Length: 252
Ligand code: NAD
Image (cartoon, rainbow, N blue to C red; front, side):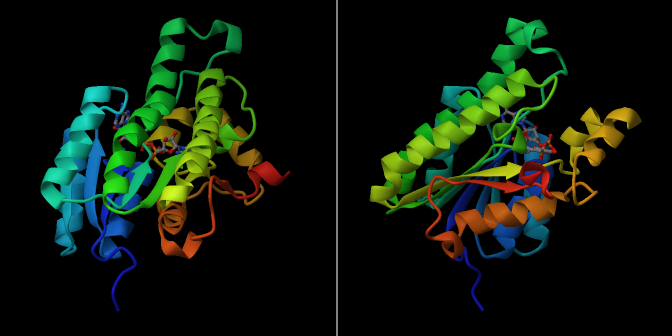
């Protein structure tokens, strides 16, 4: 049976590890030709090696999503190699340094907003013309439960992720008439390097687990499966949604 992304070209940012890597592997397993992008070129190459070992097709292109020229080169490189673009999973992101809102430095505020919010804007800015050229497609932007509700000591991260949801909703309305569906994915605590760094302190880990009704964190693959769903025709009537995959955190 043909995979759901057979013949399609799928771009994943932040594909070198964590949720992005898990998604890149799932897209490839479903027949997609996957452009794996990451600021960490070696990590992107490792993901592509894993894809090729499974007899699927992938290409690594280094990109810093906070840099407009880098995003332009990512999309033009994808088009040069594969000739089209059908799906983009804008997933690259960073955690912020825990800090009370009034104590966040301007430099830290700028760094987190530039990567987590402007990075999604710049990615879409270059992906959308390529998707239109290919006759439409789907975009999935990684926000967070911190885009839906507040979190202590994470003002910059929350502001950026709330912004990703607003940007997703506005862009979804702008482009649905031209056949591009845009949705946001809102993971809860997920077992990746990002979370492992934040929860190095056992007290923080205990606190996070205490807030999750399902009483465990998600695996990267559990989150990636929803990214694949949002990018696929199985979600054909979902437009501009912010879908929480959070073990029940936001329904309490
Ligand atoms: P991760 O740290 O495992 O992976 C993130 C990847 O993004 C890394 O490979 C990193 O090199 C890359 N990256 C960082 N800055 C970049 C930049 N400027 N340009 C391009 N790539 C860059 O983290 P993850 O947990 O897989 O996170 C993926 C996304 O999920 C992020 O947007 C994150 O905010 C979001 N998220 C994660 C969690 C969680 O608990 N892990 C929860 C909610 C949302």
